[in-house]
Image 1: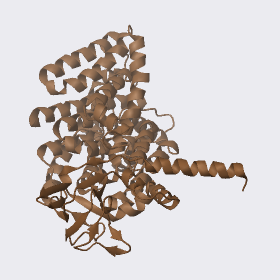
Image 2: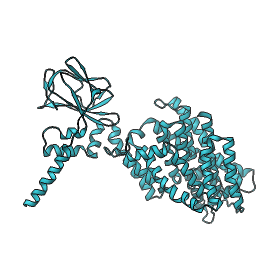
Image 3: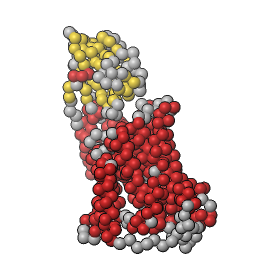
Image 4: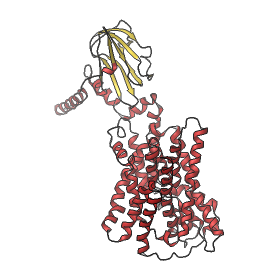
Length: 524
């Protein structure tokens, strides 16, 4: 090897050694208590034992001398923080916990690890352990390997399966969501940010979703507070033309019928909590879960933040997942409940709606909702405010910002925040899976209710409604309306249903917000 290359290699080695040698020591009084000449090493909270002290291949025994800096144990708390316990001064071991040499053993709070005569205890971070003792390239390499996410995936699986296999599984789910967004184009604006959030929050040792992590800040600031849902509603209002609803007011019934999914899920959640062990849903929890039936992500988040903060993450994931998967879930239900001739029904041209009507409508809706159902005022208010900016025609800059830049920025962070709740330790549990199942049932029932209501209305009307637009009564706007139009075009390439489907679609948005207001008024 050339002298220059040798010098470079030595410099790199020195840098590695210096990096891993940095340490700071803190006293941890909660780990030790002193009684006379005896210091007792106790565990203040529930932990899991990761590694234990072995000297020259042998375990510590009562009567052994222990020196300053000797390693005692490596533990991990429930927040996945690793803590290394070492001795501070020399002494003699007078007691050893029988579980000290059982790796990956849960240690309850208050348990005694050791008793040492005239001994102080120092707790070091993982970084301190890396620099303890004599420095060597072997130690540096070992520490480097242990700092990788791959090592954590393999060995943390022994602590809890969600820390190993579970993380791999949820990373796979994140990749699947990104694939569906890019390859299948199933609402990529939602699926790609959610999928990336799922991947990031399941990377071991990145702590991106823990206290102080960037995604944790995003979630707490925008989703937990309910700010993001309201901004999304304002953007939806600015992007939505309420003209089809005003032109054909009877489609309001289709939007109302689709809300049956909400109240059926409310009953389902109560029954699930009653008969399935391990699931404990209160009436407030059931109400928050039920709103998933409207396939309305912002409303679901807003309601859950008020009634069931502990389930907020799971409910947000379920609601946005079904919103994004509308093109997969709805078509089979629509085709099952309709005949070929019904799917080919052509609807009459909608009447012209004046700008005056479009301006008056959001103002009237805001006032009526605020007076009759104040709890729904934030959602309805922001929705109609966004629509008023659109229809007024005098604040185009505000309207353009709301329906483009602002909603796009919020959608990015909302997706990442929702995806952060797909972490294995939070998602892979019985209650979350129960919410996912209930959400699917609710969304399917809401879709079916809208289609059936359209068929019922056709019995009493000569001006027939294509039952396909009934499925657009769910609140996934404009995704549900697009699906109705696509299924109709598959039967008849000349039958455009999009504008007709927008009527029940926007009615569903208003209906889910009103339903959320009712649930808030009853249970808050």
